[in-house]
Image (cartoon, rainbow, N blue to C red; front, side, top):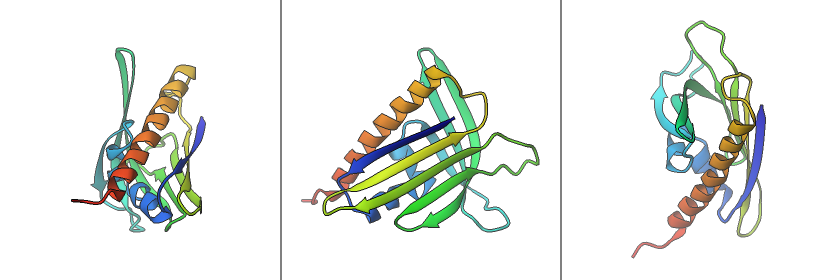
Length: 153
């Protein structure tokens, strides 16, 4: 399954990148990302996080814990996180790509792509739930960026 969504944000590429390049910031604006904690980096010293994803459909909730590493870090244009478990078992891939640009005078485009290769989180219902989370996340990200631009009295 692959979901790609873009949003125009009234912010600079620097401001947007600051909120998407570290997974610990995601719970501030993406409800799907329930909990994030720094994890021990792999042998290649790439930053790593323990991430809990949580989605609810009516009375049913699904939760998934993943170890994610940042595999691409191109300030202020791109960041990629990929599942990288260290338990020696084979796991379904999860990949999150964030691309920023082009930047205009008063806004920038953020394109996020989520790729999932497993079968636990599939089907049209889940697709809709993920779409809803992405839509709400974009609104929360816009609000967070607007709050950061407001002058402090």
